[in-house]
Image (cartoon, rainbow, N blue to C red; front, side):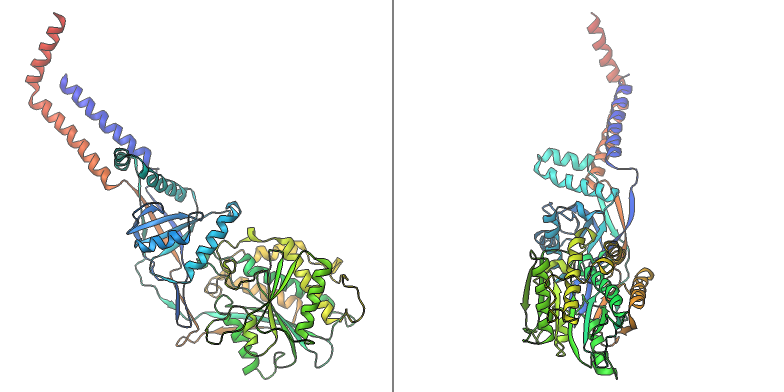
Length: 552
């Protein structure tokens, strides 16, 4: 009877442990997902981004005091420069950032903080693998578990040990791709151009250009809504509206209007550089060879009530560039007086190997040009972030900025000021107005796939996007050309690397302490059974005597 009681007690103990083990883990013990590695590239022999890819480590929260050889799990709100550097200092195995499906749900201050930290992380070379992965139920469960484990650090030692041994869940993160990272130097950068011919044989040319590629911490998650989907959207609307004016001889101005969409903008404006070289150095005849009034570069225009005109040298009086800037200021003051317009002068440092704005590529060839943006600082974190999505776009301000540019162009090309037209005259209204639905559709299309330069000539959906942009050019413009610039493999301007999207397996396991705890329970059970068997007669005699004494 005593033997039976001891056995029952031991079995209950094991059932209790088993229930704790089962309650701590979901049904799925392993989970495979795709994560996207941090940028890795070389520009002009300068290395940038993440050099590592392999991860075999236990997941830990960023709040843990010890991160050595651990994979640090963070949400967007957790990722800061301080935590990023601390993980590096402690030689963490990797960082994994969980990206929310709805960026608009993230508070604005957290978005700004993440963008700043993201920009700073991309400036340096990092051997520690950094991955970004969209959130889902399984990954959020892992995040909550490792956060809860970190929170128990403030509990008593007994509680921490008990939880670690019995209820805690350990997560092993494994990137199983053991092949070395390979360099990619055969990228093709595409630039599109099209023209609306003006009246007269020697009409001056106005160039409107924007780069269409995007940039961010992870190429596969870089959608670039404001930078620079906004510039592309405005350019395509300008092409549609001015095509209507150029289609009639009575409203065709005495200016050639050239439109250009360039690739490689996020990498030292490589596509712009190659396009200028082809037009000026190799082509027998080009509009850039002739009388260029000015070049207007559109960059990041979907937000803010500020517009900055960035120039490499202050425009001289009575020049086309100065006259256009004056027309733009008149449009703003008469119709949008709350918008602040400023001129930012930044000399080109010839010692530096990179340029800050697209117009600097033209200025280096002595072509008058400027960049229009709502950003004052060329190093702003808003110019390259995985959080730059549709949620960051203010379509009312995007349309307003497009109208300012269109009205200023019309006033300049038709010389409306000298003809006595009122300052608040509206050319673009009615059928010539910017279409809200079209601008929304264009932005949705541009952000439907990531537009990172290293993807645009490799993936079918990305190639389709460039083909669709070419189709838009052919729809409204004449003399449309597609320039494909392939790098010299022996001496590339930019080098990308593979393994940017990786299959990762997450294993849910109990920590090693649990195995010791479970082994102790089993040993105790066997000890009880063995003791009961070896001393069965003695225990029975003692129990019988105790029962008799109770009845007497």
